[in-house]
Structure formats: C-alpha cells, structure tokens
Length: 82
Image (cartoon, rainbow, N blue to C red):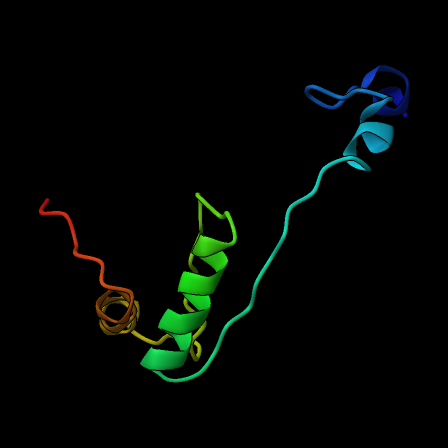
C-alpha cells in the first residue's frame, strides 16, 4: 500500500499526455523485392525524411546478418568496418 502513496515514476509529468498529441512520427512499412524496397526508400527520402530507421522482420530465431546485408546492398549502403 505504501507504494501507492509514495511511488512516482521517473520523469513523470502530468502534462505529458497533452503534449504528446502534437508529436508527429510518420511511419512507412515496406515489403517486396530489392527493387521495390529501394524505390520506396528513395521516395520516402526525397519526400524529406532525413533520419530513417530500418527494421528487418524475420521468422523467429532467424539469423539477421544475411537479411541486413541484403537490405544494405539493395539500399546502396555499405557496412562500416569494426
């Protein structure tokens, strides 16, 4: 019961739900072959997207490295050494 009286979440702010209404975070889900993915990526970038997060969706327990390597190749990206 004491947690109900004293517990306060880290960085909690009562005005946060009101402020989040103004946040715009466009999202784009793309699937297809390499050419289709590259075309949609370039359209998104030319429309003004300057920060793009890419996430690969696979089967459970799939090795992600080959998938990301293929995706990077399709988008014309190179892996940084390290």
